[in-house]
Length: 193
Image 1: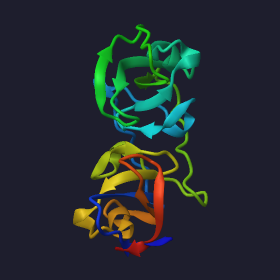
Image 2 (image 1 turned 90 degrees about the vertical axis):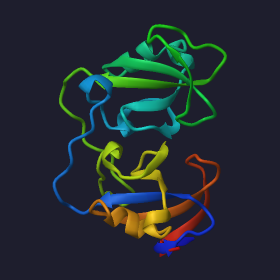
Image 3 (image 1 turned 60 degrees about the horizontal axis):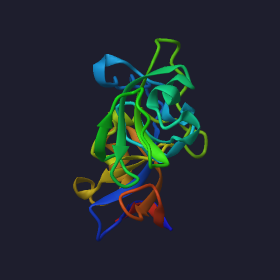
Image 4 (image 1 turned 45 degrees about the vertical axis):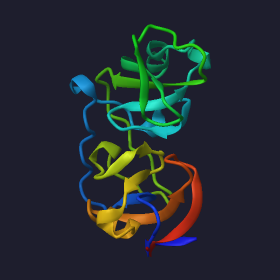
């Protein structure tokens, strides 16, 4: 187990869980085309990976492999659809929103809300909240929900406490990830390098 103030060495990126320090909540970042979306914690059937910019890796079977059907399931509209590279945010192929993406169990969907009231952000462990992932600096292409993201760690000394403080948040937990994803290989203190 690592503390938030420990530097996690021998890696270029780490998983940090950050909670806002009680200041004003930042505005969610727009999706492509200027639309906004619900907090990822409110998206159904996310397959453990969110990518910022209103895009997530989602389990596609019950939506016929189509992002339009997926986005409509929670009153959003599809903006873009992709096949992902390897359980991550890398896009292997682009599809139309109404096109079924076959031979895969999960797809990347970009969804925009229809302009209804903004949902409340998901709480971090311990009941704290955090800024929209699009406002987090140096995210390494993977967000995990529950206020946890894979972040580039070099300029923060490999420490999650320094990373979280860089945008007025507090470190809640620190991890080494398994393989550029949300799987936790080792747990650290927030102040541990």
